[in-house]
Length: 341
View (tube, rainbow, N blue to C red):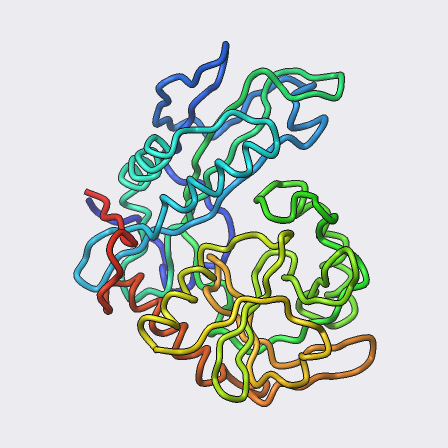
């Protein structure tokens, strides 16, 4: 299929409407078979559950053109499983895992012309999401739901490459104790919007959130898990029941252990340890790894030895290895790569 006539190397990280999307509806206790459609418009009641009580969850993954010209996507089975967790918590019907994966494959195939070419630095972002579509005025779950998948071509999350960022320790919380921090609910991200705007106004790139119960342990940012590297090159990731289980983080942990033979610790990380780490970074679907050069704790600057000019060596090797797996330059573990045929 002939590719769209786009300036692939200069795409921003922004939504661009593509030709097709997948839509399935839940009504009378069952999902319909779903369709690929050209209609990008969502039509719901003015009193829909999503509008009244934020009953919605979503996922994010990417499709790539590999070095040998194949179109692939990365670990969609884990996205399906994580959405299932979100649906259970939000009292939404689960869209079955096998159908989720098949729908991802269908919609990427239907938009093959929008998948950026290898070497462009761009990818096809895939956004599955679900919401309560029927009217709800009392506080209760909706009775009808819509599951959709849109795709859009995006450039690198950071134009010109990932440069170390500056983050601040936040006084606000991104999740409540025993709340919804470990699922990908839209309401979690709404809660973080004021704080990220305030961070930008004050010269910071992101907020680093602490555990909501004691404000003692590092958790994550508004949209990414956090990685640390110790002086003896151990990879450390915070562990908490209110952290979203990032698929990128889980993949990086596997790469660290099995490809780079690093020691990995998944444990609570006290904020007093920050001064002892040599590298720090954020990880997620959009950027894979974003290095952090400086952490500011209420006026106290903690400057990572890796500096403000580039990745530290361990995170750089992790980044290169995982992106090499995604782009087909490095052999992937069994079951990680799904080829679109």
